[in-house]
Length: 259
Ligand code: CAA
Image (cartoon, rainbow, N blue to C red):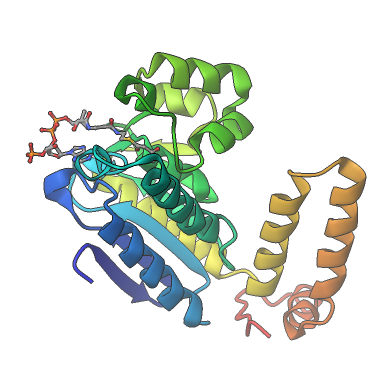
């Protein structure tokens, strides 16, 4: 892969979008290689948490590739939009948690990539925005859907209609990001959180992710049915017996088996 770096340490994998000359803009090649990297991580059952970040200290992802998009027909744009959405939906429904470590510009497709992750940690120098209408298009990789769900329709409409970027502190205030750190601490904090997540029972974490994802799309009674199903499913796992036995026997250092 030319535009993606994949690194795995212990139970945590890190995907780095590595096209710094174009501020990590999402060309078709980047999207395809990201898709391949996700499949590789998915196949490695020892990975319990994934981090996605951008190369360099300036940009997470500055959006879809404008040069590549400029001359697309409506049909080609539909294909590109569908592919971007397919990859981002793969992230959203990924079998383990995905943390975005947002190290700079998260604009257009970059903001959309961050929003498809479960948790967003950002550098205090990061900049967020959906500038698409200033280019004559709408957001195309999920921005009209996920931004409104995350921050509410009013603020989403303001950001999308004005095409104005916002700074990290505003992104934190509206709930677009979970936490801010100085840039040089960001990756350590992301790794710390990822390793903390990876210490918990992977099946329970995955079931909780599914319950939250599905539950936020349906009415409360259907959501609770999903929770009951995912909760009960944990009782088919060895880790449930192990985790509860550790508690009762006052064992502090747990080592879940993912079974
Ligand atoms: N696509 C293609 N190339 C991009 C790019 C993008 N989204 N963003 C930056 N680049 C390229 C620039 O063209 C430039 O290349 P050259 O050196 O070859 O000229 C290089 O990256 C560095 O960029 P700048 O010189 O512009 O850097 P800057 O520091 O002056 O500005 C910036 C940084 C504010 C992020 C500016 O680059 C910018 O506004 N980028 C575009 C942001 C944008 O509009 N994103 C939305 C894209 S549309 C989209 O994402 C649709 C969708 O939802 C699917």
